[in-house]
Length: 106
Image (cartoon, rainbow, N blue to C red; front, side, top):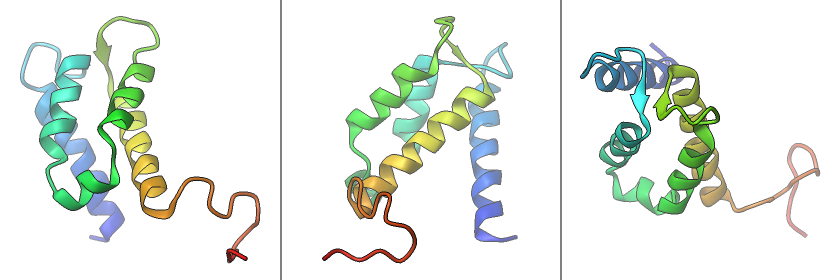
């Protein structure tokens, strides 16, 4: 299995494990999702790349209908938001924005 395929399987399995702990097998409460993210982001290297404020910001944007539940679609949007935050922290905000491939700082 490729690196990307392993990452996708891991994202799905983490959701299923956490969503399967109560009667709502396909939903997570916002609190459960926050706990899941805090428990899963344990590497010092990754914590250096993702600010805790980014987690809160992404979480606040998820529950659009304010039902207190997060389905897999919303969860995957949260993971994508964390990936963007990691990328931004690693490479810098707006670096090469709008300059196309292979841009260089001048």
